[in-house]
Image (cartoon, one colour):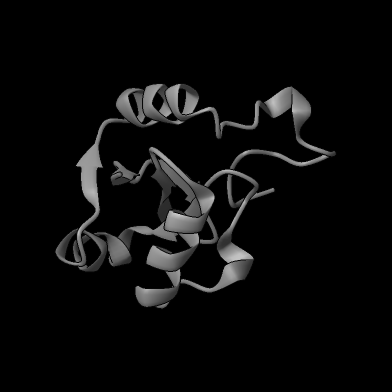
Length: 96
């Protein structure tokens, strides 16, 4: 099981954002986020939105930095992905 974080590229609220996911389970993702001090409100159905300034701290805590494409492929392969069309009236990025 691996926690993945992609390159910060989603602008919102005056900063860039990344996505943090698990390639295996939401329980693993939530446990990692809690240990890393990421608030539950940052969770968006299948990922956490994390600010660019958190990236190095998350990597030091064990997250593996990947491209957005690799993160998406891993999320789909895990069966955890929630497609944009299946999101109840929500966007996919922190600027919603």
